[in-house]
Image (cartoon, rainbow, N blue to C red; front, side, top):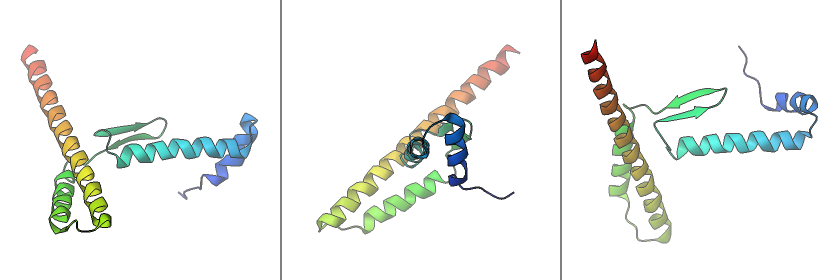
Length: 122
């Protein structure tokens, strides 16, 4: 199976819908920009993309990422504005990872409780 570039779909889609290629390009660009933002900002443990699927955060990789960011923070010495900005960025990423870990933990506990109640009723 050979992957196809999105450029190959712009012209046929524009002709089919009766719009300019630029409009179709802007819409697809906006959509995928929003998808990338949702993934990089770790908005939730699962990011649903219509007609494409779901992207799940890997629970085993999050602690590794947390350790990586914590190690990066210990190495940084914010003496310059550039390093202060880097430190702030790494702190924000660490906070997002911690939030995602807590969300996934609470979801796991909720599912365990649900399964426990479900198995009691049988």
